[in-house]
Length: 139
Image (tube, rainbow, N blue to C red; front, side, top):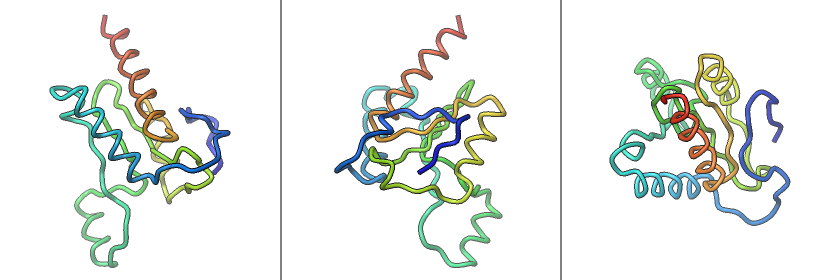
């Protein structure tokens, strides 16, 4: 995978080896955030499901209902919003889907905290950095 220089990457880009699939990483991240922040971030953190096989009619209907190509795996509303594309810890076992990098760049341009995380631990590291940064700006 190639990374756009304007999108920060959390995690070890040199790591190679066995690692969980993206779905397991996402489940682990959301379980952790809901356990540790049950009344705040755990309530609002979301994954917009826009991947998987669908018929042409399903895709057309979902686009009309607001589905956006490239929406990232983790979105947490806030000021700024947390926008994170979660990839496998060994990123050579992941690939970009259409629109993902463009979404991250557009969100960043509009003021969101946009990043790529290699595994759930890296996603949580990015989340902690974002939440600490938010606290600094609100004081």
